[in-house]
Length: 373
Image (cartoon, rainbow, N blue to C red; front, side, top):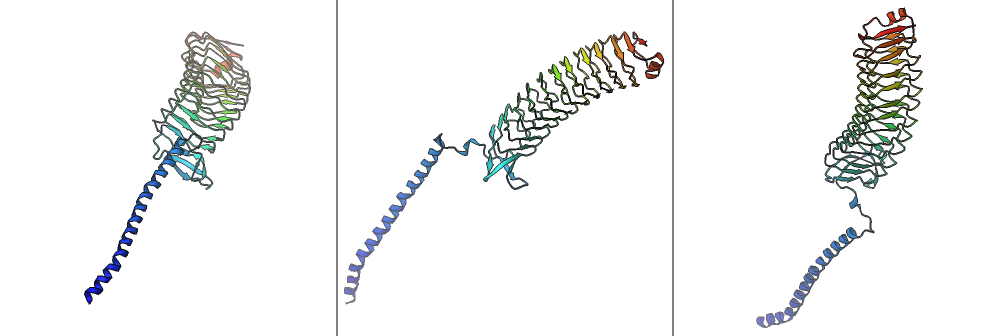
């Protein structure tokens, strides 16, 4: 009896078991075929986006650059190269949905493999040394949105030939283009009022530069050792030529000084070896020490009646100077004024012999004769 019952159970259970196994197998087949279909579709869509020129993508912007939230919290600052290996850098206009507003100090400093940089219009500030010592950098695009560029921002960018500066810039900072040996031309925007110390120092390829009429201050050594600088016109409003302003400008042949000028600083034209003539305007009261030292070709100097002080070695080693007139307004002359002026024959002083004896009780070159009123 038990065997009959067991046999009947097997007969009824077997079809159900077979049906269950078939359904499970069908489910597995459906799952297996659907997965590769999804993967294939995803890959196809990605390729389409990358290859369609009508769809803008972020692949044009450099990836891996390092950012931090700005102090205001309204945007991001670019702080470094991060993991980016591009040699042609295109800085993105936004990061995490907020604008990139500042390129921080030394962000690209000494990245010697970078050849070009594009700055987006979201950026308003480029801080000091941002691109300093990028020795392979040849091209940089700076948008009109930038209003501030920090000190030494492009210093020692030795391959940089020109830089388009934004018109809203008001300051050429200290050392901005220091040692940019390949820099051939630069247009200073009309809104600039101040040029900092060493701003264009040792720009050996710079032949001429137009200083806007709105500039009222030029810092020390701003154009020092610009070996190919030929002509300079100082605009009205400048009252002082600061120390070392054109020191070592060996090709400087023509200088136009403004009527607003009151002082010529130390070593201003020292080493300008082919400068032949200089007219110092009325209003200048002081010529400081070594102002024209080793201007070997200088043979024509016109001094104003407003001059009161001439510093030590102001015209020292001007070996082509044969004659000079010292106005009677001068009340103080330092020692060694004409030391090394081997060709100075005639010195005219527009005062009395007694005044001259008190004013300059020092030795003059051997061949020099003093003529007084």
